[in-house]
Amino acid sequence: MTEQTNPYDIPETWVWTTLDNIGLIVGGGTPATDEPAFWGGRIPWITPADLSSHAGKLVFGGARTITEEGLNNSSAIVLPPQAVLFSSRAPIGYVAIAGMELATNQGFKSIVPLQEMSSDYVYFYLKFAKDEAIKRASGTTFLEISGAAFAKIPIPLPSYGEQRRIVAKLEELLSEINSSEQYLRQATKQLSIFREAILEQAFTGELTKEYRESQGLNSTAEVLSDINSEIHKAYQNEVDEWHGAVRTWIEGGKKGTKPRRTITKHKKNISTLPTESHPYHIPDGWCWVRSESLLSYVTSGSRDWKKYYSSEGSYFIRTQDIKTNTLVYDNAAFVKLPDHVEGKRSRIQKGDLLMTITGANVGKIAHVSVDPPEAYVSQSVALIRPLLKELSPYLHMYLQATTTGAKFIEEMVYGVGRPVLSLVNMNDIPIPLCSFQEQKEILSLVAEKLSLIGNLEQAIELGFQQVQLLREAIMKRAFTGKLVDQHLEEGTGQELLERLLSKMEANKAKFKKDHAIKRRTKAVPDLDLIKLQMRKHFPTDEFTVDQLRKYVKVSPERFKDAFFKMLEEGTFVESRFDLNSETRLYKIRR
Image (cartoon, rainbow, N blue to C red; front, side, top):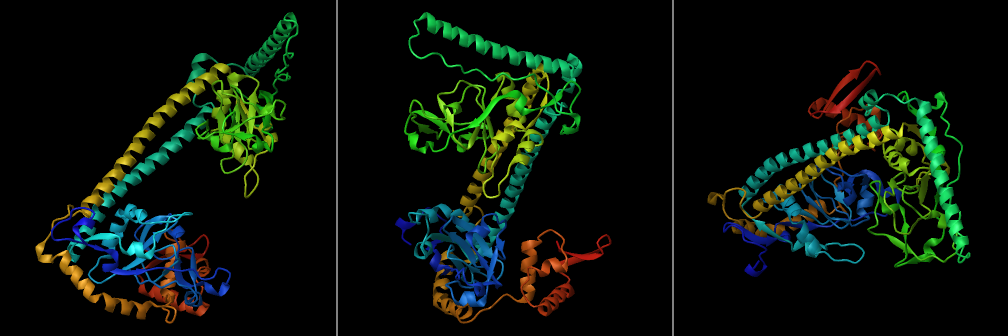
């Protein structure tokens, strides 16, 4: 490479080259998916999806395997152990090292490093150079880097000895970083548990136990009487306001349209649930009621409002607008409605609760806590209007609690492909009711504690960002020659490159001879296949022979011979006899 094409400065003992000069670039392929004879064989077959949640450098198999016939009838090629896999599309940048002979689909551009090239060095460098690969990709539907473009990705080349020392230092430092990251993940999970515990305590009465002891207990009858009184008072205020508006209209000569009667439906006094219907124990003075007793009405948007979509007008609330149990207007849709369109009942107002009733986020709920702009809900969002606005914050928080309100909502969801909640369900939610004063205390205490958790989560998120910055800084030092010292006695990168180039043609010929599987296939030996399936299905769990047998597609005789050979080796698996099940259990030895 010339000075003009060198991406950045490297030590004098290093040299810039390209991937095709340090290894063989190999693609992949997929046998016809409608041909059963091509699938379920003994050749591990990897797709980018298999690496999406893969941890560790080595990969031994994916979700599927292919047969020799499938291999011979596709462009897939068996890669040797230590080949470096790089996903070239959907997405670009997953990296792994083959732990055994395996094949990939066409979503990879893999490299088989030549002798005197460290696969681990190439692995770490490709993770570091992901952005460079993306720059060289093209495509309209999705980005993909071609084999030719991948081959010309520049790579800084030190001596083989220095490659190994860089890898050793990287693994040491990254192991410490990974441990820190794991600690942050555990802390995040613990905070999530704390949040759930706080909400559970809130709606079982445990959180306000001291408050009740200091304030004195209200009886259930007193709680119901106070709430019923407030409901009747709110109803009467609405009636009085409407009568006043009508009088004003009459005194003004009845000009314009007569004020509409938009008064909350008057309901009978709240009744409690019978004891046998109580979901769990609550304190004395609290009571269980059906949500219907506390709601004015429940509705959802009308169908076929897409014809009213516009770039401006009234907000149109969809499921994606209810995020983290909050109403967000960032990417809102708008509708322009005719004067007499059906469905204006779905206009939201302050105090309403909005719940998603279809789709992946079913059960998410938002509280309209301030006077909103003119907005209507879609047919996938339920508008839940409490009889009293004062009840809304309490109900909103209760329906987020995963072990209480949200749990009851989850149990009402039906539908396999597309989860759905019925509007009828909204009236059947059991609600633990306490006095208005205690509700306010619950909301105050929960807000205080969740604020502390939120601050800790922000600190943890900052920790994740710092860990990532540190990881990037270490990788940058590694591939600019600043992580370990250079030892002149190990030779130079230029000398290594010349040796690699001199052997390139011979290596290509050997690879074609050994791994051109269209004519010669080296399928996975039975013992390796058994170990592969153990790693894949029982990485840490115990299993029986019958459980393992289901995943190993060889004859019973071959399975038995290979399994007993593994037991005789005594290094890969351990076993014990379980007295309860009277079964011998096996486990990968650690």
